[in-house]
Image 1 (spheres, rainbow, N blue to C red):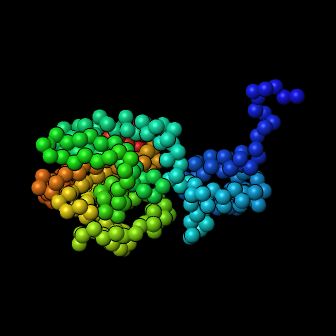
Image 2 (cartoon, rainbow, N blue to C red; image 1 turned 60 degrees about the vertical axis):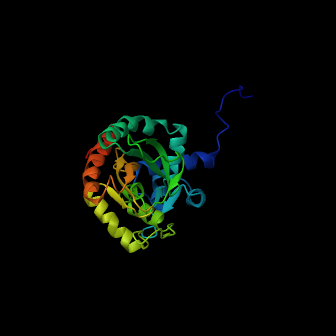
Image 3 (spheres, rainbow, N blue to C red; image 1 turned 90 degrees about the horizontal axis):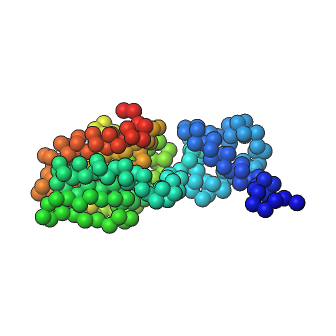
Length: 260
């Protein structure tokens, strides 16, 4: 009879296999095919197929339609953030957000892409008499926002495509990007400059500029951005602010092991 409190002998084989598959895909960031997983893990192919099919249906894995490779989805970031109570990235970034706020005097925000939605994680309210205050936990439009573009521009191509394909392309005004082609052209500019712009594409008279924060693998885990009325942050000052935010975001990225 087994002693109470021990776990040996109570393991679930398919659960252990699922965890090994997840851990293996963590190492192989470019993804693996069903055959490659079977060769590496020596599990029965039928068992691997059932497990990865379930993980894909639940949104934990993404399957490339080009070469059949499976990769981990961003859903694991949500789990990771929940285990940290979102405190790690927030606590790390807050001093840098305050520094940007003190330099530009405008509201600075931190957000992340979670389950293909942009979610506000934290904000530092601006010093101006009139400034923007947003609600932490609320979502933002990915196709019409600086943080959305900043993160999506640097995602692996398969994941980027999967996120963009969920867009409804809501038109807020005549500046809103409403086609995939136009959006992808915008992402090229974001990658070239290292920061993204929102030229009042959702709200009239409200401009934003933001930059991604990377982990040690060069994966965009969050975005930091400034939002302000166009009268104070006009088009002529957006790029200047973008360079400052990019520099600060890269400083945060270095803490996570990113080497630029």
